[in-house]
Length: 237
Length: 237
DNA sequence: GAGTGGTCTAGACCACGGT
DNA sequence: CCGTGGTCTAGACCACTCC
Figure: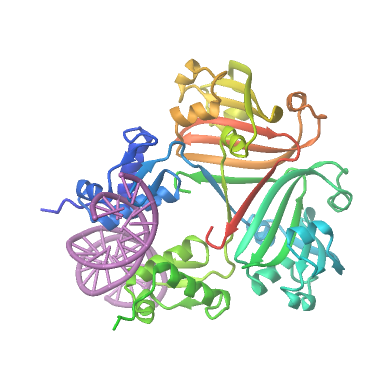
C-alpha cells in the first residue's frame, strides 16, 4: 500500500490552476494556507510551496505573509521574447547572413543619447552604423552608441569583422537592459540602406544596456518592412 | 560557533553569477556538480539546486542530467512584457478612459481569421470593432473576432458596456496565446477613427488566444502614432 | 503577538541520458 | 551501467506583516 502522497509539484500546481480557472477558487478570494493544502494533497509543505510559488511567478495569485494567498482579480498575463542575436536568428532559419560596417566615429554624444545613457558631461561616445543582410537583402540597420567611459576597450575592437552586439556580449556583459518597441516612418539613412521610400512604416527596436549604474550602449535597430516579432506563451510561459 | 552554511540560495546564485560574468567559469565550460558546490558553500544540495535552477531559468546555464551544468556560450537574454488591460493601463497613469463600441456583427470569418484561429469550416464568428480613448483622444482601435463555437455565450454579452477583452477574461480564460508586434501603415478604418492620414506608421499588436486546442479570439490592436512599448529587464527579470 | 509564507537541512529515491 | 540533476519528505527556524 502506497502512502497518499503521490503528487509532483507540477501536478499539484495543475490541480490548483484548475480550481482557479473554473472559479472553484474565486478571483480576489483567499485560498487555504500551505499546511492545509499539504494535508489535502498528502504531500510535504515544501512541495505545495513550490507549486504556489510557480502560480505566483506566473501571475495567477498574490502571496503575502500572514495575509495568505489570494487569486488575482485579473490574471496578470505576460509575454516573453527571446532577444535574438541577429546573426544567429538568420542562420538558424537557414538563410545566409552578411554584415557590413557603414560608419565608425568617435563623436560627442547627441542629446538623445546623452539622455538615454545618462552620460552627464562625459560626452565621448563611439558611434557605429551597420547593416545586416538576410539572403543578401538588407534586413536591419543598426545605429549604435557605445559609452567609452565604461567600455574604453571598444576603441580597439575591429567592428568591421565582428558586430558590436557580439563584441559587447563577450566583453561587456550587462546586468540591466531597457527595451522599447515602436513603429516609425523610415528616416533618410534607413531608407537609403534598406532601399525603401522615406516614411515607409518600419519596426524599431531600441535597447540600452547597463552594468549596475554604468551605461554601456544604446542600440537602435530599424527593420526592413514586414518584420514581425512573435511569441507563443503557454500558460506557464 | 556557527556552522559554515550561511548562504541563502540567492546569495549563492549571486556568487555563481559573478563567476560567470568575470569568466572564472567560462562560456561553454562545465561547472562543478551540485554535491561539490554544496560542499564548497557549506549548504544543502537543495539550496544549491535552487540557485542553479534560477540561473538556468534566466538563460545563464544549461543543465542536463548526467552531462552536468555548463555556462551558455551566449547568454540568452529575454524581455518580458506585461500584457496590459487597456482600461487599467490608462487609468493607472492618471488619465481618463473611455470606450466606444463601433460595430458588432455575426459574420462568416474572413480567410485570415479562419486561418489564425484554425476555424476549419465552422465559420461563424462575432466581429467587433471598438475604440478606446485616453483623455478623450483616440488611443487604440480594436478589431476582434470571437470564435462562437468555443464561446457561444458571447452573443449574449453587451459589448457596448464592457470591452470584449474584459468580458473574455472573466468568461473565457485562455491557456495559450500568440502575440505578434509589427509596424504597419494605418488602413482606412483606423485612419478615420484615429484621425490620422492613411499610411501613417502605427504600432500593431495582434493576439490570438486558445483554451487547449480551441481557439477563442483574435484581436488586432492598432495604436495611435507615438505609442511605444517599453520594458526594463533586470539581470533576473 | 501570532499566523503565514520563505527558506534551509539531511536524507532519500527517481528519471534521464551519456558511455 | 551509473553519474547527474529533479524532486519529495519531515522537520526546523526565520521574517514579514496584519491585528
